[in-house]
Amino acid sequence: MRTVVHCAPGAAIRIPALFEGLGAKRVLLVSDKGLVQAGIVQQIQSVFEHNNLGKVKLAGVYTDILPDASCSSVNDATEFARSLAADSILAIGGGSVLDASKGIKYALHNGLTDIGDALQTGIKIEAWPKQSAAGIPHIGVPTTAGTGAEASAIAVFLNEEMNIKSNLVSPGLEPDMAVLDANLTVGLPASITAATGMDALTHAIEAIASPASNCMTDAHAFMAAQLIMENLPLVVENGDDVIARSNMLQASTMAIDAFFGCLNAIPVHNCAHAFGAMFHIPHGDANAALLPIVLDAMKDFYVGQGARLAKAVNCFSEGKSDDELLADATFAIKKLTETINTPTNFQKWGVSSEHRESITTAIASDPAAMFLPLPPQAVNNIIDRVL
Image (cartoon, rainbow, N blue to C red; front, side, top):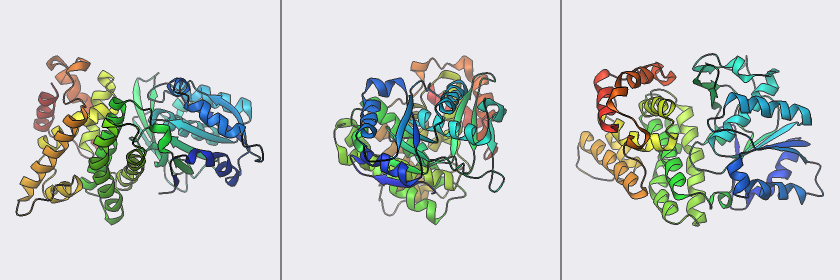
C-alpha cells in the first residue's frame, strides 16, 4: 500500500504540516455540498486559517462534485485547479469525492481537459513504467468508512456522454497520504454508516475468497472483516462512538488494500455494479443486499472457502464441514444486515421481473465479468432473490 496512513481522532489538524512535508504550497480542497452543509468543509478551512506559521495556503475550494464522480464535475474542478495554479489536492468526502480528486490529479498530470477522453471503455488499466505517480501532493480524508478510496489506485467515473461507469486503474492514482479522523464521521446518519460499512465488508470478503488471495492480503482482509462485524453494529446504534468509528475507518482502508492487492473474481461487486448502474442503487446498499445472496447462489465458486469465511465473520464452530461453515458465514452476514437495517432486496428501487433480460446483460457486460463470468443459473437465482 503506497498511501501513508495517519489515524487518530482529531488528526485533521495535521493536514497543513503534512502538505508542507510533501512540498505543497497551494492546495485545492475538493468536496461536495453535503459536507458544506454538515460544516466539515468549513472545519478543514479553519485548520488552514490557523496555520499562520506554515508555508502552505488553501488556494481554493471546489464543492460541486456530483455523485458517482461524473466526468463533467471532474473536468470543471480540473479547470478550476488550473485557474488557481494549485499544486496539490486535498479531498474531503466519501468515495465520489475521493475518486474525483484522483481524476483531477490524473487530468493535470496527463494534460487532459476532458477526462472522458481517457475513459472510452468500461475499464482502463495502466501499468508502471508507462504510467507513474504524478508527483502532485495529494491527501485523502474519508468521511465514510466504506469505499477505502483514500488508499486505492482505482477510481470509478460516470462518463455521461457514453452513459457508462468507467474504471481507471493507474499507478500513483491513490493519495500520498490518508488522514483517518473519526471525528469527521460522527455526524454520519445511521443508514449511510450501515451501507458504507457493508461496502467495506464486501471488499474484505471478496479478497478472502479471491483466487489470487495471499498472505499479505489475508492479513488486512481478515482483520478488516472481523473489525467490521464487531464495530459496525456499534456505530449504527451509537454514531458518537469515536473508538468504533476509528476502528471502522481503519477496517475500510485495510479492506480496500486487500481487495485491490488480489483483484480477481468479484461476483458480488459484478452484480452490484450492474444493479447500481441500472437502478441508481447506492453501492453500499447494493452490496449489503447482494453479499449473502451471492454467497448462497454461487456455492460452487466458494467451495473450500467455508472455514476461511466463517473465521472472517467470527464464526468459530468446531466439527463442521466446509459447506456448513459457508452456510454459517452467510447466515452471520445476513443477521448483520438485519441488525443494522440495510436492504435485503431491491424492491424499493423498482426492480421487477420485466427487467430480467437487461439485468442479465448488464451483469455479463460489467468489466468485473472478465475475471469470472457468472453462470446463467446463478444469475437467475440472484435476480429471483433480489426481487
